[in-house]
Image 1 (cartoon, rainbow, N blue to C red):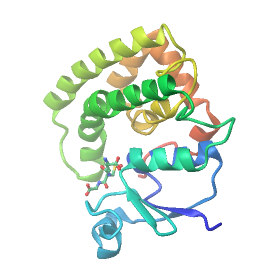
Image 2 (cartoon, rainbow, N blue to C red):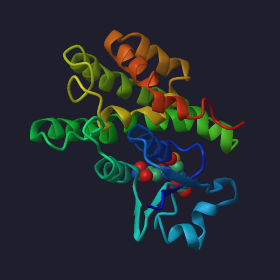
Image 3 (cartoon, protein in one colour):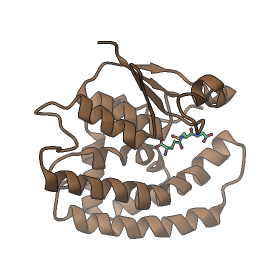
Image 4 (tube, rainbow, N blue to C red):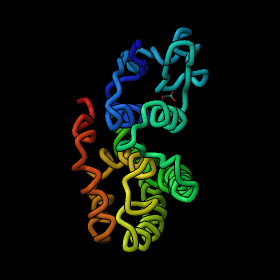
Length: 217
Ligand code: GS8
């Protein structure tokens, strides 16, 4: 069986979500590099795979997908095994709870931590711009409120969807891996013991060790 392909640079948060899914299930895959510095993600060949000209894109034979959370679901369904099922498809209740926390990740968490990461790290580092501190401040307040909900939830269950690691947890990993190096973000995690323990358990997973430690210089 030909390996599935992920078209992406080594470092991109959405792309790392897909790579982590592949690593968790032990699937064979090929990462086809997309050089964003030269605008390869806007090339006709890439736009044919991801019509928004973004990374990642994914290919399995004739099937071409984009949107990292949808690709992740596909990978986890295709390669699931009795001992590796991060979507808990055999339980209606557990899979519904995974869906809840995946929505929370995309609609609440990412919308707060994403702009902090973009303003504090990406703009100065890659675009030579100046961080908009107001955007950072506003989103730190938002993130703190989201993490209060997580702290309450994680004081009842070890992971977000229950006492089992799932795609809902994994999906938080990529942006957090980089954004937690921002001192104000780290402080929000440090102040919430259950959130901090949850984060440490995600960091200690073998698949997480495959993620590049830092951003390219
Ligand atoms: C977001 C993809 C995205 O923003 C997904 O796949 O989850 N909802 C989509 N990709 C960024 C790189 S960050 O991972 C990207 O391609 N940016 C370049 C651009 O938008 O031109």
